[in-house]
Image 1 (cartoon, helix red, strand yellow):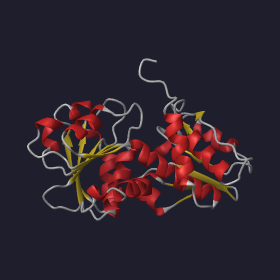
Image 2: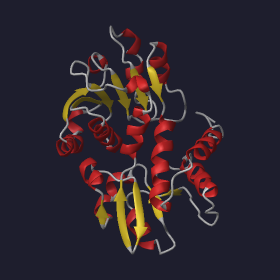
Image 3: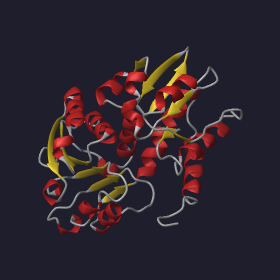
Image 4: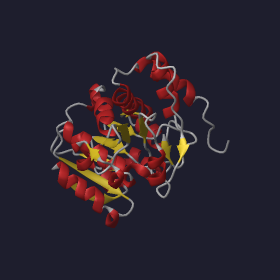
Length: 277
């Protein structure tokens, strides 16, 4: 697991539980601090004993020019969170998108997303927001609203929307962007979505589903506010689990043991220090 920071990542717990359940007791998975500057040298150092890598921010886009090949979804989204190392090649995949699709599809309240008068709302404009656009497309949505702190810095998101053939309406963060959303997907880190949480209970028509990709600390202010107004809340752990399961399948060629991974992840989540700890 590469990224910066990665010290509190749950991915090692999920992957280690999967390898143990699959009998791959000689496999190892570790969180390694790595930024964009160090990524090329790290990839060069990976020998034939490496099966693959998971990537988190800020590496999902930085890795693209370092890949030998990438699945079409990576090209469309403009981000890869998984690299397979096979036959001396670096193969890029994006498991965030199928992870989001599964997390949404498994909640009945999130169905029937394609309502013309209530487009889905994505909070944030980074790589995970682009993955959310792809997930909405796969679920039948043709357009979405995207709320960001700085609308001028959305060139990569707009380019991804063009490749995905999904129309986007970019707006500043705040109450107006929330007014018509039936589904809200927050891809914002930490407390960045608090400004939205603070106005959620003031809406005439509140969202029915709120999906917050943050998994710690939980609940976020956004998740708590969504629960108070009666929305179905989907937490970031659901995304983390499902995208990790797909990574396990890609790296091992075997079905992921979801229940063992879920249990290990929830147990590890309890050990992460809280804010200020």
